Amino acid sequence: MSRPPLSLAALEARIVRCRRCPRLVAWREEVARTKRRAYRDEVYWGRPVPGFGDPRARIVLVGLAPGAHGSNRTGRMFTGDRSGDFLWPALHRAGLATAPRSLARDDGLELHRAFITAAARCAPPANRPTPAELARCAPFLDAELALLRWARVYLALGAVGWEAVLDHLRRAGRELPRPRPRFGHGAEWFLPGGPALIGTYHPSQQNTQTGRLTPAMLDAVLRRAFTGRARPPAQRPAGGSGREARADPSPVRAPTWSCPTGRRRGVKPGKRIRTGWLRSWRGLPPSGITGRARDQE
Ligand code: SF4
Image (cartoon, rainbow, N blue to C red; front, side, top):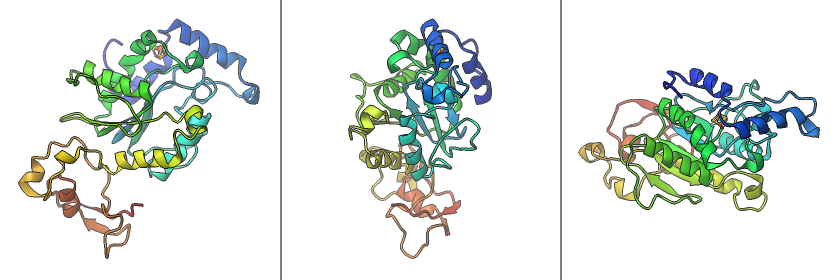
């Protein structure tokens, strides 16, 4: 990529035109031509799939690559296959998606405070992009993550997404520890002065049908990312206010104001409250801003 684009829309226009990987271009177009019998009346997207979501996202989900008859058909990340059928209800339960299903690019679905992207933008044969193809596609991920300036948590959907985020951070000049943080379900890594990285098993059929990844497991990871609790215990201030809070180096800021005890006594969910006590609990300096109390299961 020559110069980094100035907006996500400009970046999307570049992504969908890309033909840098001959093997993937041939595969995505072949799949779009031959189609699966169940979708024979549909017009496949058959192009690279751009990221989707809120430009002011606090959580960025990074997957592997589009599915041949999923995103490569519909043109939206995690849409039209079993992975999406598992992921979108979880995003909806977490309050990040406006609907529990993603059907097509024009179905009106929105993500709030979240963005979904992937390490590779073209559907690979056998869901396996080669290291060279991942490297060729990496500038798109770099540009996208650079434009998502509000991101506080990168949520890697699988080991490839995890490594793609680490590689992005390295290319962005961040120092990575040696050995590199290892991927695992629920694994967390905290970049000093930058976003946190959390891992979850990929919501592929292989994982969800075998019970390796359950809805409850994914909910727990999303809740951890969403509530802003993803920070190392050592960095959480004991008293949680004043100078101590201001000195807190935690890279994760709470994306919403919510009750840490599940339900603040005497305050109904939805009632406007001052957030000073919440900010001090989270180790942030007081702002005097008001927010809405949220019920939190
Ligand atoms: S995988 Fe990425 S770099 Fe390769 S053709 Fe698709 S969009 Fe271009």
